[in-house]
Image 1 (tube, one colour):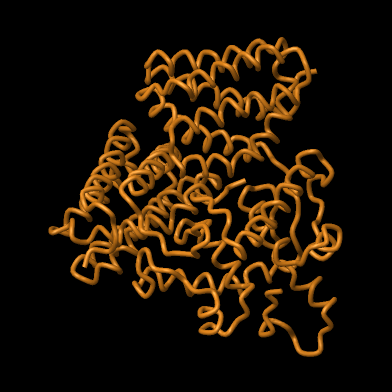
Image 2: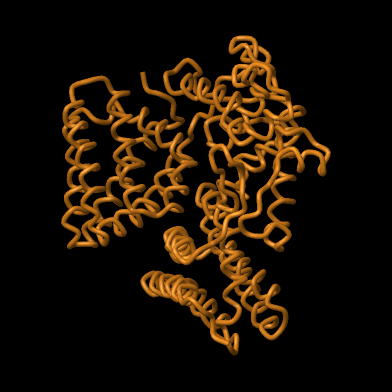
Length: 240
Length: 227
């Protein structure tokens, strides 16, 4: 149904292709379509609340409608799109309640991850986190989307550094929404240095690993303050 | 299994596609949990498509979901296999559940929502009533308790996270049977958590959930269960 001709070796029969390339096709056309649509949502091509047209997207991306439908499902699953009864598929516009919920679950996952990392004292993982922090400092005066990417990388690195596959997995479905929230945050950081300082404080507390209460408090504050900033915006969308 | 944050049935074409992978995932999941596909068994997309009389697209999507849930694992160039839950995995399941359930308990303890608290007590009562019966029934009530606790927090995303752990939790619970000798512990631990939540004692609820998770993880970490 969503077989991608570009992936087949010439002269191979359908049966041979299936047994050898089966699992790889999981990542094929629907995945690529999802990646394109996802990028469009993050760069503002598809605005919050905007409707997506299956037929048009299929034509633009040069694929059949099956993979587009599968991509829609995946992005609905990620929380970037939502389907409305009898109306169609739309780009999510995170409302206040959703924004608070994103930060609530991130707080739960990231505190658990940070405590585990602090207990493990994994120097390699800490080193990687420090590198991300450094690149954040360098990007302070650059474009906000670049800073968003680094911010996200910091939190993702923090979670994966905990060495818990399931905490990392729990973070995956909120990854896309987190990125949306971060992109909304720009007008709330007049002093971008504050953003860096918040992350550095978390890093240092986790790195020393001595004061678990401090680690928890810093992450709680980081999350609740971000949620409060965005919740004040009312129905969110990228502030422009 | 994880379902979308906003279920939107009724949309004609997407509905068809959403429900088919979900239905297939449900079938495969229960087959795996009942042992029809043992650990390390390979699942063939073509074979499943033939047996279930659907196309391969929804089979792939269903497999993708079960990979996310941790029941299947994809190996590059080899195929998709049923996982075996090892000791590290069991510990990790309880670590992640601890994070999720403690966050939920914090909210529930603060808000004390009446109907969910009543429901939680009913589940513990049913658990107590079934304690001497089939282990499968004990498991169902045990799981229902934790699902209801997370549900009571009213967070769509926390619910979704918890659901990705349900299948693996069930695998853990199946293996926990020999560790609950008189089975009164299993009732007592849940009642104690509920009592702390209901009485608004956040610190105690938090500690009891942590102990509950640590104890289960520790039980599953010994190589051989008690005879």
